[in-house]
Length: 544
Image (cartoon, rainbow, N blue to C red; front, side, top):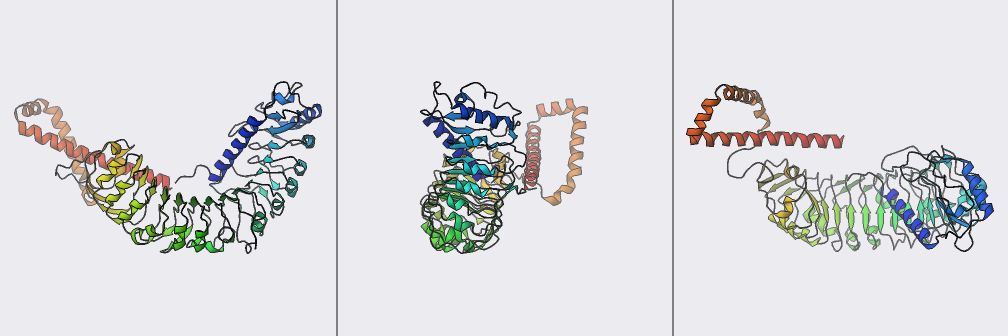
């Protein structure tokens, strides 16, 4: 799976949009509401310290500041309650400059959004910890640097805190913001969303203890924070409301069982867990069975090994909908070891690409009746594709490419009316490709079956009439010069003896039949050579 943007960034954007919409819908300021004069002056002083190359603040003039762009006032009192100062995502003209303490005049401000700006590496002002009415503070991706001021821990009313410090958390980047500990976070007992992805927390040894004191916390984003070993888990945890944890790309580099924050705490509400590229090794611990509310588990890019990757307790995770362990070293037998340990009740997505899975797809795969996506490419699967695959009526995406599968493609695939993506390339499949309206609607059909020299029938140009048109083996390429010579001779003969050939075809029916058979043979061979070369080149480019 490609990673264009991290899940943490997407979730925080959606959360911000939701809260912004909720605030805008619940407290619109009518045209008759006038802002407080001293607050208007504070806003003008704040504007004077900023640089605004895109003229985002051009509306900040006149008497009524409640009508200015990015400003919202209370219906009843006229006090400024929301301030959003940024040009929006990916705008080339970013707001910058200095954040002046005149903001402290806005004592009724409960929403402040200064994200997606460029403050030139300046530190986050300490005085922000005095905006005691704030319920939401967004400072993400605004080019702040230095230590996050612990004074932010004085904002006891905060519900939403986002200080993500990276525009793209899928690639390593240099840290700009740091926090030597998270003791200040432990005082934000109303906090529901905490986003510190991309902030250097490598020195925060007791981070798990600080976070465990947040009884209202629902969403936690700590990807790419340099987190390592943790202290023993606290005796009591208040994280009973926690629903989502994103902790990918932290150098834990240890066995799963050592991550006490996840496995040894009581997390009855946890639905989403992402710990990709964290250097985990060994198998998933038995304690995973305690996460009975878990719906999505992402563990891609670790070093998970062994034939007992999934403990027997994994069956207890009955609400699981999505499971991804791409790019690991799992060497389980699919039929005898893997399927028996997966919770089958609600599973919709199963992604185990690029592992060491063996065995064949058993008839028991039909028990995953809710499955919409099944990705098992680049493993060591062998045997035939079971006919029961046709019973997965909700299957939308199916990838078995780059395995050792043989035999015919089951006809049941053509009955999967929801199927939109199929990849069976680079196996040892043989026989006629099943016909069916659904299979004919798939995009890039030739690439679906490429690398299976024994397949024939549409959409391939290799027919199934019994004529031997198997692609040339590598050792036969030495005769390529002879083929070129034949083509050249044919062209010369065609130019010189056009009238002879034409007359011969006109009166000799046998000549016409042999010529067209030969033409079909050569067309098929050239088509397959070009297609195989193109697909191989594209994969090398993506892999590099």
